Length: 88
Image (cartoon, rainbow, N blue to C red; front, side, top):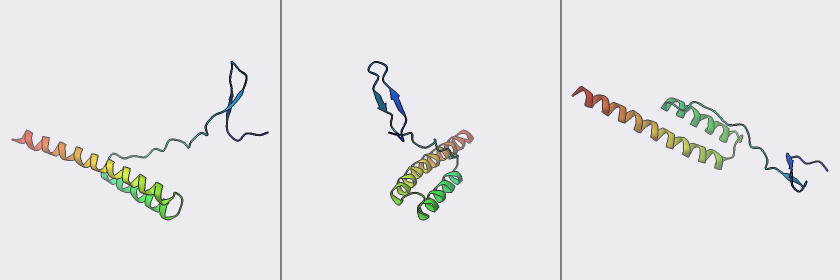
């Protein structure tokens, strides 16, 4: 019988155990600037709209990207305040 998932053999018992399915490769994209985040949001929108990913997944991804966006905005604001305080 063929198994579509990888298996391992238990060394003590000799029994075959199925391993969990391997997920896709780690996704990498640049998210250092608001422009990067905006581009990734647009990509998620297009993929959701084209049904490459389902809308529930797209919604979750955009929600996470909004959190990254807020973090970048906060960090940029903090840097600007520091610069203004140094000028005093």
